[in-house]
Length: 110
Image (cartoon, rainbow, N blue to C red):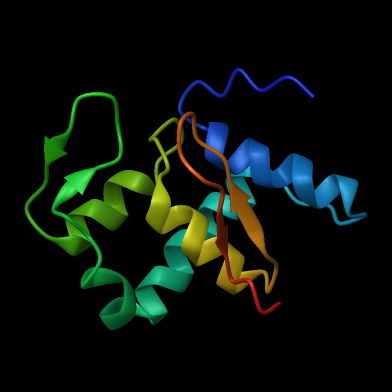
C-alpha cells in the first residue's frame, strides 16, 4: 500500500504491517505507544539516543524528555528508536529495509 507519510511514515508503515497480520491500530495510537514504551524503559533507550530528532536535517534537542515531547507530536519523524520501541511494545518482529544496507530485524525473538 502507498505511504505518503508526511512525517508519519514510520507509524503508517507499522500500521499497514499490523493490518496485514489481522491487527488493527492507528498511526496516532502507535506513536503514543512508542513514546509511552520509551518513557517506561528510558534507561534502555536513552543510551542509544544520539541527541537529535529523526528528521531530514538533524536537529539537536536539549534532553531525552524534550526529544520524547517532540516525537509525540503528529508529523514528527520516526526513526530507529521508534521502530525498536514498537517492536518490543507490540511483541512483533519488524524488518527495516534501507537502500544499500542489509535488512535489520528488530525484536527477532517474538
